Image (cartoon, rainbow, N blue to C red; front, top):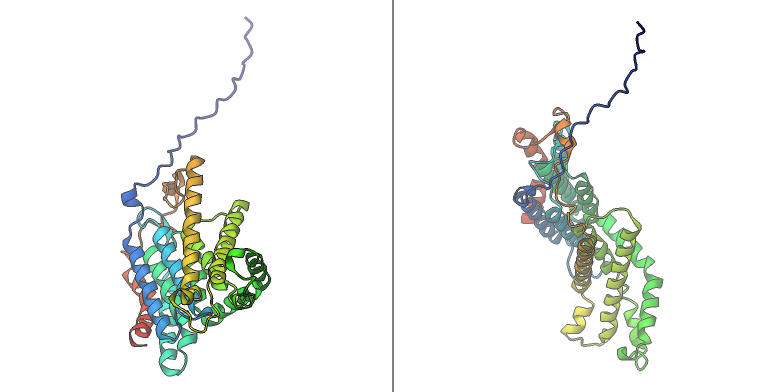
Length: 345
């Protein structure tokens, strides 16, 4: 009796396990604000210490740059704070914590033993306090935010702040002159009848307004390296620079007895205020654009990714600060030199 040949049926692939949908974390549990308030307190303490070290918010130069950097750090820490109990992270090692504590002790000893070190040492003291506080509060969560805090804290160092400000002022010489000359052709400014006002206005190039716009934009927005990012940032910085030049050229800043309005036009506070307004408008534009494109999921909302449950619990831990109080205390050691400088001067 003939036997039919065996026909091997094609193997049916095993069904893949269903992947859980990525769900946003509820608003109440996504980002506790207590840690952000601690970072804000360190920024305020740093501002007091910087003022005690001789930097002033009325300096027409690099003296305001550290305060702007602290404002950017505070804004970033408040807006982009990570979720403490929902984002797995690597545990901060005891070696790094001991390094922060040792650096804090050395900086405090140098501050006490070396006279005239206030302006040079305030930057490293501030950076150590801010980065140590970040690691103590959030560990390695949100590495983009950690990089932002680290980079912006470098602007509190006197040599770096002066170099960045002076380099930007030199680079803005030709663009600033071009804007002033274009504005001087508008009859409403009255430069044609008083041409010397143009030469007085050219001394105010808007280096601080440009730097403030960039720093505050970094703190207030989450950027991606795309062409639209550069277009948005360039347009916002250009608009704030033009607005600053309009305010300067509209005021008789060359008067021998200027009034309060004229003094305000040349005050660094105006430059920072114009920058803050430009950043706020840019944030509103990006928000409306996201809603128009149906991108209503905010990038700042932490997501429960499916691969979180498969991560190695030895490398990643959900919470580490409660189980490692000594490490947390060592990371916070940098706050004590900063508090000493702020409270004693």
